[in-house]
Image 1 (cartoon, rainbow, N blue to C red):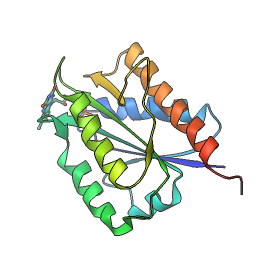
Image 2: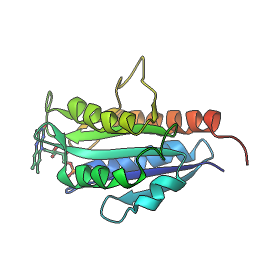
Image 3: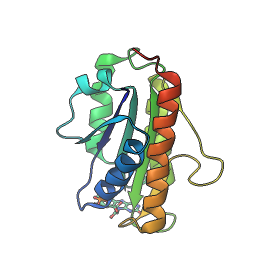
Length: 160
Ligand SMILES: Cc1cc2nc3c(=O)[nH]c(=O)nc-3n(C[C@H](O)[C@H](O)[C@H](O)COP(=O)(O)O)c2cc1C
């Protein structure tokens, strides 16, 4: 069964709520999901996962330092994450607060790792964003992100 790893940082719980909804969506597609706070995630988890979804609150228009540090440490496995599926989500404080730039910053790192990132022609084009605590609509988008990543992982992961 393919595995999806969700790693997130959250100080006041908003991004964590998003992470839980992303997890729910992915699980509904019948994949294994490991959800971890960035402080507890190990780099080895990246190697084991078929899909990697990173979530961070928006801090000054980009990801939190904790998430950036995790990504920087992932250089240990540079080249080893190629063709895994990636995705990003972010919670920010207000309209135009920079959640999209945060998602794109995380996505740049995923692409540098050689990962496959699927856009969305209808909802959150770049990855899922929320203002503050995710409302029902934002949670729905988070679930959709989890479902989409899981479906792509299933298409790209050979049965073992
Ligand atoms: C250090 C810091 C910087 C922030 N910078 C921004 C920002 O640039 N734009 C924004 O909209 N919100 C900003 N916020 C608000 C958070 O992104 C927002 O409250 C988010 O929902 C927090 O997520 P969390 O509950 O997962 O910690 C900032 C918060 C902190 C603590």
